[in-house]
Length: 162
Image 1 (cartoon, one colour):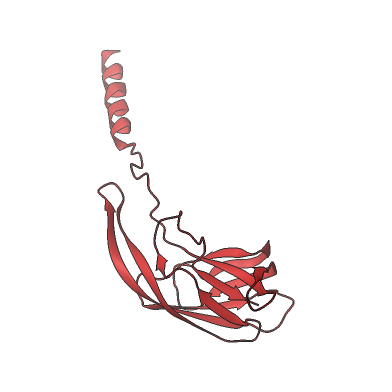
Image 2 (tube, rainbow, N blue to C red):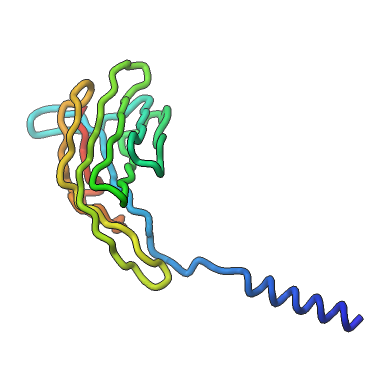
């Protein structure tokens, strides 16, 4: 009986030592926020709802298909690669439209130390965006700094006008 109790206590301590909590309490994912817009006049614009969005990463190995058939959204997130200084995406605002646009984001990368618990992540600075104009009219970079700060104003980094 004492032997069984001893084995049970040893197993309990081994399992208790194996359980780890995630001590990181700050965001570590860095996502670029994109907002689709429609120009009303030269000085005013409004959100443009994308009916059936398809967004695919061409050269970013971590995420090939970001959005497939996303219904009625006006803003979305894009991941930038910490391995290269540019990312290429294919954008189809509505799957019923045959034309597809390319979005080529060029940016700088900077490795940032967050904390001992959270480790490191990359912050990005958007340099430029090259794009085709099948469905897209213009693109405006609103906030060049892509960090873990979710309280930035304006809330989006890039606005795409259709």
